[in-house]
Image (cartoon, rainbow, N blue to C red; front, top):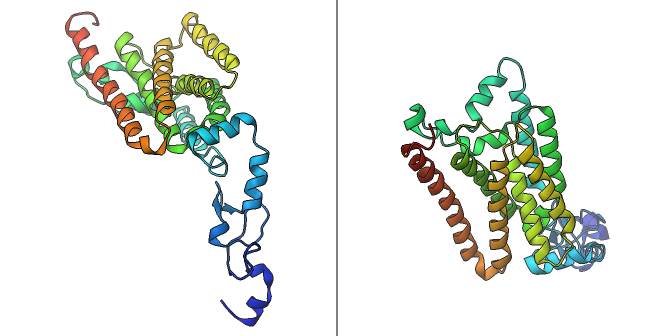
Length: 294
């Protein structure tokens, strides 16, 4: 557009470059900015002045995280992946609580080792290693897990970035399922607790790497794990597996955070995933054939 009316209106030009027309507004101050002045934000873009103000409001730990993880403060905004996981998990879990159809959903998704090993049941349904994270054993179980996910995710996801965070969540949940298959294959387990313990362990590792005070996180992690050892109906095996894998994945992140190490990071994470699948494919069947599990 270059009509006289458009040209006469200075709001149609970048406030930092008056000779550049633009149709894009800063999502914080609503001033017009040209492509050179735009920094991607979780929603829309922001201008350099708003970006500067945003960084001034950061805590020392947030500034260290942005520098060390190579991310902009604008990109670290809303924990979109955390919200998405909460939405999908809550939807599936609530539907599974509906009388009549709930049992069918739970029976189709819940983790139960015989469904992984045809020699026990004649059925092979490996997706249960992952879908068990979507089902919970009641509203309180769901509410506590989603509260923990929200509390951890809003801090951890902006530090890691969305794809790293999602990878951490999935691998931690897989680690929990694998540990259950190896230590107690006759146990039916549901819930995202293994993945959440992985997030807690990762927050501990990343926080320590950044020089933050992680004593509180460590205390909460230990208390929750010990609680699961002595209370019936809680799968401490899933907690242990998720915690160990989450710590390992976080350690990989802290050692491969530079851009030039991206290929190495992807390779190591892939090795963790393949390694977990090999463990669940080889170890329990060997124990079953040896008569350890009947």
